[in-house]
Every structure is written in structure tokens, then in C-alpha cells.
Image 1 (spheres, rainbow, N blue to C red):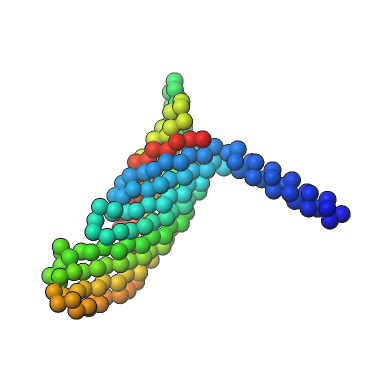
Image 2: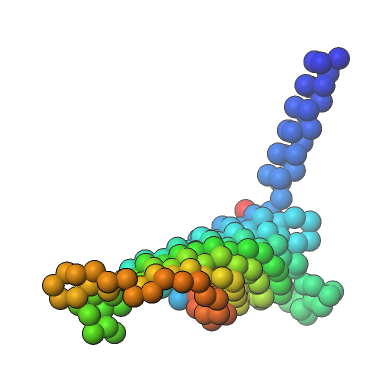
Length: 190
């Protein structure tokens, strides 16, 4: 009886893996106020999207942000008109995101150096339009807001190297409505 149970669980696990692998996927990148790696996995008529990016990568410092959303493809049954090759879709979704930044803003400060580090976590939304070519390529334009609590610390250094902590605190990441929220993506479908 034990061997039959193990065999049943093994067959069920292999079926689950085969089903997950058989679902269409897409991998690629997005650019906005930074650069991101993007992965999509189809679940029935909808899809899960996961992004890992580096917002504001061109400033003095670095940031990292991860967002995962569950998306409904053509919600409310509203489809785009058909085209001869490829197809248009629109989607919307909800999920979670987390990120952090560490930047030097000395160009704005009267101090010799000002370092600002912050972290944030919150609810993410995703609203977008995509075009799927007749070959395995997808283009998308989307707005992906991420709002929630943020935690920050400002540290200043004067010209003699003395360190001052100006402020620590908790705020609201309202900048997530526009900061790294408008994205253009290209993905390879497989």
C-alpha cells in the first residue's frame, strides 16, 4: 500500500510539472526609469508576471525592485479588433512589490555628501497593452504603480568627514504612482 501511495504521488507530481512546463511563457526586459528583467507565465486565459529591476540606474547610487502580479487578459470580455497577423491584448492585474534605494544626492546638498537610503513595500497594480507578433515576440506598454509604506534614512557628511544622521522615519511611497511606473517591454515567447 505504501509503494502505491508513493507511486501515485510521484505520478501526480510529474503531471503537475508537465502541465506547468507546457504553459506558454515569455521572458524579456522592460525599460522605464530604469531597466528590468521580466518573466510571464500563462495560467489558463490569464498570466502571472514577475519583474526584477534596477530603478534609476543612471543616478549616483543604486536601487533594486521586485514586483509580482496576477493579470487578467482582456478583462470584462473587451477584446481588440482582430488583425491579419499577430494579436492585440490588454490586461490588468494586482500583486505585491518590494524595493530599496541607496543614492548620493550631494549635488543638491550644502554638505560635502548626502546619502539617502530607503526601502518600500506595497501593493502593485498593472495596466497594459501588448502586441503579440505571429513569430514569438511580444511588445508591451504598461503603467505599474507600486504604493505602500516606505522606510528611509538620510545621512550627511560635511567637508571634514563628520557624519550626521539627519532623519529616519516611515512614510508613504506615493512616488510609486509615477517613479519607474511607465514601462515599455519586449519579451520572447516560448
